[in-house]
Length: 316
Image (tube, rainbow, N blue to C red; front, side, top):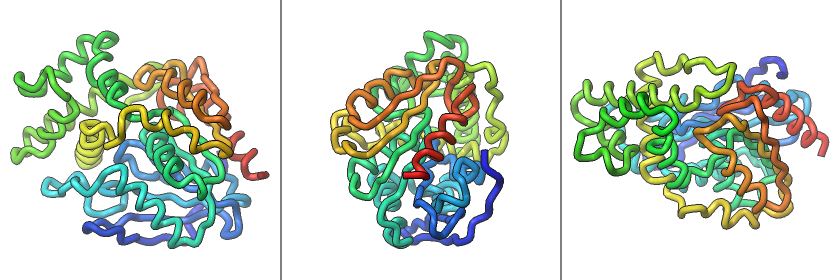
């Protein structure tokens, strides 16, 4: 990966509804514009994202999505209302930032939840997207959420029963993400903390499928744990406010936009049929399925393919 770089510009964007979104720009002021769309939801755009880009060739924009990272207010705070944090809001925030920075077109780099948001953004605004690079591809459909929150119990039965049994008995047969979301907004801090810990334990279970996996150290921080659990359950409980399968159905809008989809075959929390279907519906997408990779960038060959794609697009 490329050396560490520091932002040469940064700020807080007032996007309305009481939200201020953190953004930064690094690399070359005259380079090819690109934007990082982080995962989670709620992970924030950490400094490690900058290292995928050649700083002499790219002008890289990083943004912390609503209620996470350095954006305010913080979803970890018990009285924060998440009702004005939806996929539509995040798409509008990206557009507002692009316009404020005077960028005509930019490349999208996203992962996991960031792949869903990147595809939704690109399908609404294809005219401002030059290329797309996605890894650990998701569409956040109801089918995918049911797979992660319920069907994965067939693979991890003991761990799933513990995950399910944190939810009140009368809610265990329904939408588990929404049930957790309700607990994470309970007035009792002990209920909130129990739900946050159980949710993050389950997250660490269902992505622990590739040889190099290590438990996520962020979950040891109670603030980060609460922030992530609240935002993920908020989005998953509503299937990201997207019509079922809409991203595949409308992938034709991406015609003419070169894309690279990178996905691990060991990513059973987000099965390979998700990027497979997207690649077949998107005329200009190329799909790389890696046998020794799971969810995230830690699997064998993932980083190399991301860097190769970005280096190639830097020359276009």
